[in-house]
Image 1 (spheres, rainbow, N blue to C red):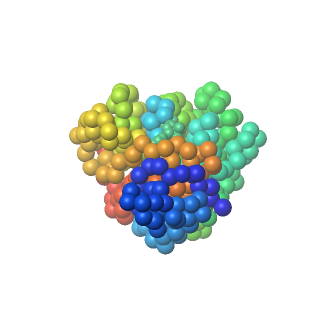
Image 2 (spheres, rainbow, N blue to C red):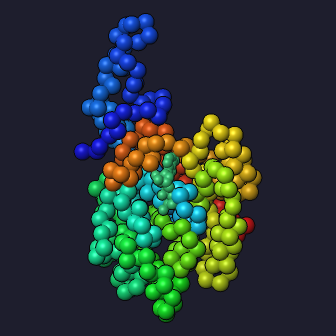
Image 3 (cartoon, protein in one colour):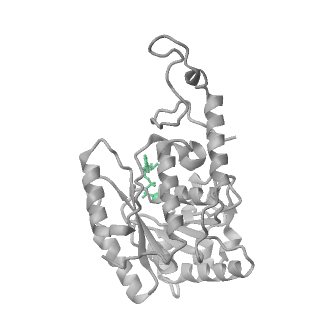
Length: 331
Ligand code: ADP
Ligand code: MG
């Protein structure tokens, strides 16, 4: 059964009330009387059931998205797993490919990634088919994951001496999608969680992907280093993968109490225009707690502000998927 926070504190309007059982006039409050762990769990279960009943549009073809930003801690992994969970719970087939040796995406999806587990390392270095190393999450049959183990930490160097080192992942993804489309099992979304660098692993992701999703943290220096990422996208597009483009920019960890967050958001919108998802992901403690329980925030506390933010963002991304997707190459 899903573990729930001991107490909900993030101020969602429809959260189970957390007022005291006696209201300010000293009368008995029905809402508050139901503020128990069991009631909260029941409310969460109802929300998840409602989410599952709604089907979002399928994209015209499988969307391969690299979640990239060479800065660490900007919300790449959180974005990859939560967008994936939101899409999967709405009936779309999603495969998360964990390309960070830390394996944080695997952790958040509750997938074993201890050293020795079959993983994306075997795909890159030994040519194992993706289907061979794919695990299904316990949240939904539609949500699968290719885990990353610590073995991947050496892959950047090990790949250097390999033939077609930039194309290893692209070849694996193409072969996988071709077979999966033929037998009707293709994912609607293949979401690649990149490590915080622009090394060979991220390069492999950019060569394999069609779209880049850039999470930008609403913080100091948010835009610093972005030119470098856009430059890499442009270089990959020019030399290795002409179909690649930035399709989606997501503002993460937004703190409405700071003017800085608004300034960053405005600057990002000015630069990227319609590529920026309207929904902004708020900074919310539930989001950071969820991975500790092997969960996404959506499966952990579906009513939290973080979950609502990711659900809205994912819906926008899915809505865009039924149309030709607006993209922007390079800066
Ligand atoms: P990256 O993959 O870019 O390194 P992460 O997704 O791992 O970044 O996020 C960095 C840290 O910030 C993690 O501890 C994560 O739980 C936390 N975090 C991410 N998004 C939020 C959010 N919206 N609210 C609160 N904490 C967040
Ligand atoms: Mg990460």
